[in-house]
Amino acid sequence: MSTPRAHRRRRRVRRDRHGRGLRGPLLPAALPAARTRAERFDDLVLDAVELLERRWAEQLAGVEFAVEDVPPSDPAPWEDEVVPLGRLFPADSSGPARVVLYRRPLETRAGGEDLEDLVADVVVEQVAHLLDLDPEEVDPRYGGEEDEG
Image 1 (cartoon, one colour):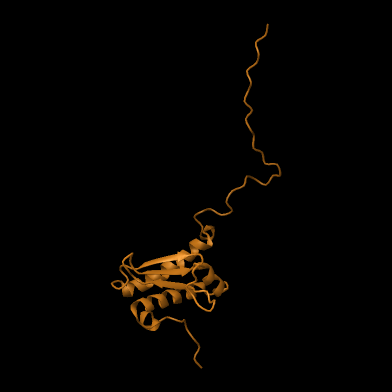
Image 2 (cartoon, rainbow, N blue to C red):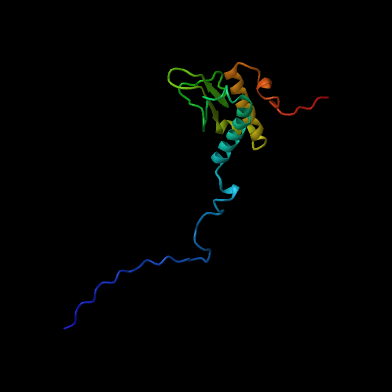
């Protein structure tokens, strides 16, 4: 009498049906192009804040900087249906002053060009509002280079 054969577990073989190789990331994580748009935007904000903190370190010591994708829609903090690019929340009993930049409206306004300059200008405007100064006093480069002629 023969003994029943033990069931062999079939090992699932992954195969490359079309000769294209296994799927995976297109770029290694170490390359700059592998970063998401949101991560690159965060870097632009950090760069702009870092430049201001060199000059205004004492005044900006407790200020928080944040990025949100879009401004809240209910209740709308803006009038005339103009979407804000950034907003200052003054310090109060619930926490320190907070500057928030809205990524999607900024990207849309920049249209793929000069996003870095637009982000820097919005950060300067919000810090100027916080410090009750003109933006040109906060950063002499505010507004970029304009042609005079």
